[in-house]
Length: 85
Image 1: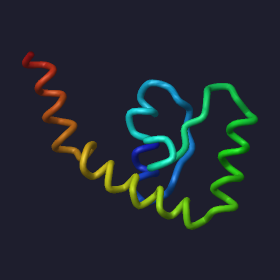
Image 2 (image 1 turned 45 degrees about the vertical axis):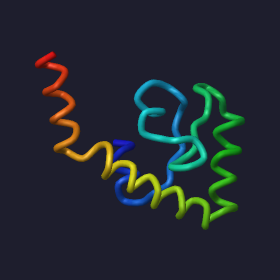
Image 3 (image 1 turned 90 degrees about the horizontal axis):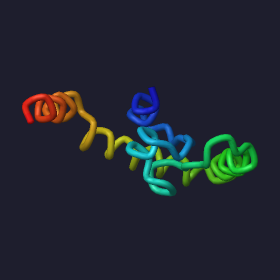
C-alpha cells in the first residue's frame, strides 16, 4: 500500500523496518522513523506539515523511484529470477 501512496506523488512517513526502508530513502523520498517511537513520528509529521514544498519534492522523487524500481515488469522479472535461481 505504501508504494501506491508514493506512486501518486504523496510524500510519506513510515517505520524503518524491512520492506518499508526498501521503498523510502530517508529524507529523499519520505521519512523513516524508528518503530514504536511516537515522538519521532510526530516530529516527522510536523516537519512535512510545516514544509509543504519539501513534502511535494519528496512525493515527486518517491514517484520516480517507484516507477524505476517497482514497476510491474521489474517486480515480475525479479521474482522470476529468484524462482529460476
